[in-house]
Image (tube, rainbow, N blue to C red; front, top):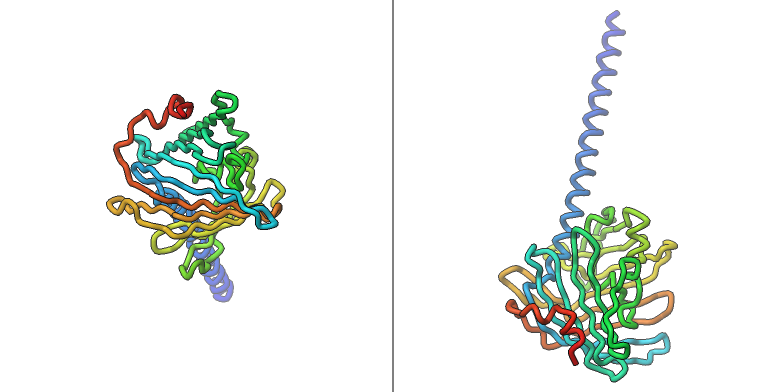
Length: 274
């Protein structure tokens, strides 16, 4: 009888320990998920300045090493919710791209609004949600890459840590929650490398709808352009399509913080203006 009681007591202790272990591990996993979402969201916010005007050079490099360059001017502003970004980009050169304009308005609660003005047609074309995976004006960046990704559309998993540009980074896997997200962005999975101390995205990878590696990207030469809000800007962004061997580099020049940009810079009329 005593032996039976001892066995029962020992069994209860083991069951209790097992339940405790499961609860602790469950809490840790839940905490990890919450933290990863916060890390990714904060990382996306670190580059959203109150307002700016900047010039950029796009360098398109084919697999043989030949280069083509495009010059742009961009205007950005945060929406009233302090989260969504609105951006106008106009191409200044070369001649075949001059006058092309793109107006992008993020929308955390719905579809982003993307308008493309083509001077040859003298008309504005709306980019539908399904077109966000298309090339951004012939570059290796897609509209999804330029607009950014809604945090809640992805499931995050920690892959540990890694080192990029001499900086310790979180290594995070982001998997599309739904087929709709994958079809819209063109990606089933992304790998994010986010610097631990300031949450700046330094590098990563994107995988196509078949699960194959499609692009590698990096962001460098960061400058703290709005210290009061701890906002940064990468002066060099690079993306390589590993399937085609093509590469695009964006060099930002003459960046100016401007928190008083008028509405006219973010209008269809401004897109159409020479």
